[in-house]
Length: 405
Ligand SMILES: [Cu+2]
Image (cartoon, rainbow, N blue to C red; front, side, top):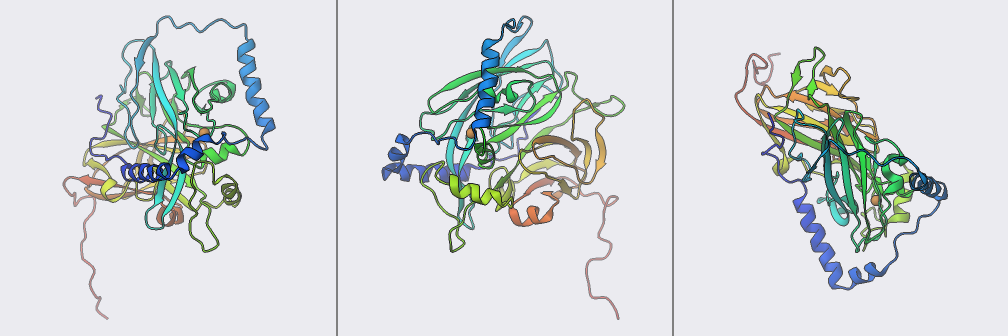
């Protein structure tokens, strides 16, 4: 079964992109954009230690007398990355030998609406324009070869730390790109599982970039696919890729969310808000409502969905209301999956996968079961499931009515 994209899923943040580009366009027309473009990249402050770390990582590989990587036996393929909650085309069981999977990501800075009701917005720092960044999928033993491009119009330098990789701060030490620069990093996927990736320019810029959306996930599948405890194959019909994002958006003296003219302008205010450790929003896929209502995830009774949940900065406890995690991998895909889970755990700084086969039609809420976050901060997605109701599983025996006294 090679179907990997949930055809029922809608693009999550088209609305936000539109709003973002419109507002950016308005800024450009008034000259704000041109002014912003002349500004220097945000200086890195209070991060001399991190900076030296990055320099050391780059120097070590530059000074290395190690042999070049042996790429014989690898086949090169391009992976077209797609917007969340979609997953790129991929095989669940690898065919042929190991591959070098070429991907390209642009570090796009854009104004995004976080909550239409309150007008809360953020100059998001993104990979390829989405929060979370796109899902990359490979198999154990493959190499991922990333071209990372920072558009000339950017305000800031960016890089990437792949938790799935080994060495040089996850690649963070080798991928610093200033506006107008690009670089190429190749790393071997030796650990199967779901892993987060994120920007890590140094010091306080690391949480600043991460809490402005600059994170995503890599899924490294075993070459022979997922398995249960007995070694039986487990296959999915679709993937729902969900990124949990904590935002710390500054407010003015009236309690209204502040607006900023360009990416990075909120830096000082954001750091103050971040120090509280209390997010103003904790949303799925970039914005309140990005995966609910019209944007709800779609499935059918009998369909098996793999929910890949990335949470780069905060712990999360996903729960599918009315359903379960039939098989859950919080750690390596080579570990025996947990089964029949009611709620599972995504450690801040990681990604996890949960597989579920829908048995009843209806609307399911997929929430952070810290319900304050789920219901009040935005951490909710909906699955709308079509199919036939099974009274054996549940039946309303008596509908609500006044009881006799
Ligand atoms: Cu960044």
